[in-house]
Image (cartoon, one colour):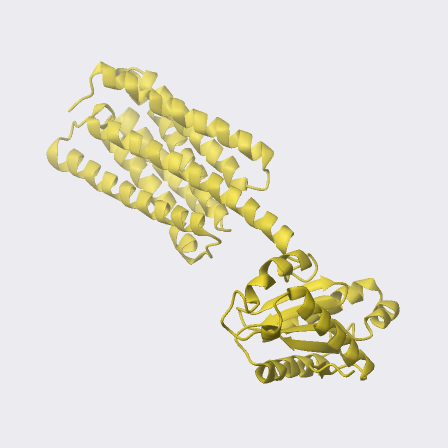
Length: 385
């Protein structure tokens, strides 16, 4: 069934919306150059809008003259969109594969425009090329690591669009070769519907790609706010925000807090330089983190001083964990360039005995100082008066 003139006028909204999406995406990209997918999304949206606008304005009887260039624009659109999605998942399209598909597509379009003019066959060829362009990036997207929920939605939408492209191609081939060889896809309600499905996916991909960029920014800000730049563990402010939940008033479990200070850190800085000192801090944080559990709280609270809350452990159990940390640290050199053994002095307290975090930290700090006086590289858990 062919579209009436009112529907044809309504179809003009599709290319206008696509061009608007492209302009909006390029404005966002200019403000956030690190989100490269926005650039390719803009190219795809503008070229799709331009192609559909041209197709809507060109008289049907003259369409075959422009089919070669319109097909080129449409395929370029989906190459750009595939690249936008691929970049989001830290991969790329195969430019050589896309070039081969583009050349073969244009040969087919040329033949069925100027030698054996068949409009629906042209659509079938172009649709198959688009399907192949998208299908070749799916394995890499499937294997990619998802950073947050927006990535999961983007991945699912890419698969859903592939399914729609496949169904469209099968339906078009069936209509052309089994129902009506002269079927005019571009002026049919099926063509009208697929245009709006294409617009829907373009809007969806634009929203998701913009959403992933915003989410990345929020994650980066949260990391900057809550984590120590040098070591990557929690910073002082974040530790104090989270630690109150581990006190007896908020927890039914037994928790142990310990503070530790790297021994002879000033001598390392003096002998090897401040860059080496930074390496020692990273080494210390990495080693301790690797020996803790996911529910433990570990933070750098200043200089070479660290604090940790061990969750759901008694004091004897905690002392075993801390002793293991102390032993591992004191038997591993930082690196061949910095051949020093990192030791630390530890002070541990049972959090159940405190209602105020500052009191627990004060006593742990006193115990840590007591460990320093006792010769360093040891653990103290009882204050000696």
